[in-house]
Length: 353
Image (cartoon, rainbow, N blue to C red):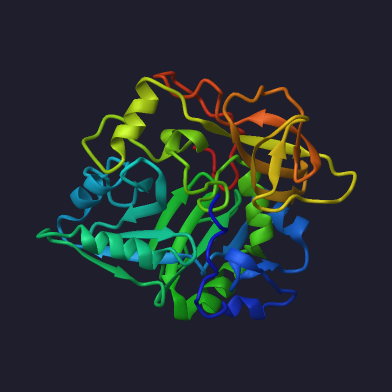
């Protein structure tokens, strides 16, 4: 299994100076874990309006008239016809089909803006630069100049003034703003009623929505089918890209070796398993814990990557904590079986259409 995500080298966010802010550690260092009320912050994100500081994430901007066809050829997603303002998820795979990067992106009509996990932008940019050839594209790591904020909740409203790019996601709306204006943008959103919420609240809602996070709920062997990205970040009918052979083989002929599962954890001991803790049956270790959190309604929960063949009704332990499963990726995934991921309806941060 890979190590947790690298710690971001960026300066700490000015929003850590907000009242009650407690700094996050590990991969989310540099932003707030919470602002004094983790459960209240979850409720704001789910039920009204909240703002999450994700300014530790990497931001890359790509310009040039070949930008969409270029990314189309490099990633798992069909991007040639991406309309301005439409957001997409995409993956960069290794030659053997393992996930190397997860991208969230939008094209504004003149440039593609994308954001990635903390500390991942330099390696992604290096790969992109190696694949430029004679194409009319320019890619730049603009993490030092721009930052990601995430608006969530049914009352979160439109992007703030001065937003460089905005992209809808199942959890809410990511906005990219000038890093020097982080505090001012947050203050303006606060005047609109958006409460500051830390990464603990964001992660709890992400886990409850069964959304994997690259580098935590994945490892160096992860392929898209295992964590459900085959449904959200892969276009199965597009042309060649690196790693496509593995994707096609699993989709048409086989099954992934593992599957993402959602765990309800026993809360009687007030313990949460850590990233990388073993998930086990009574007889053997069958996987590892990716992310764990305490949810304001569901209690202690986690995502885990386990062997595909583990029966879905089999009791497990996660880092020694008793756990029961809810299916996210079906044991039948692959072999050209159409899978509907088991995720909650009414995802937070999205207004009804």
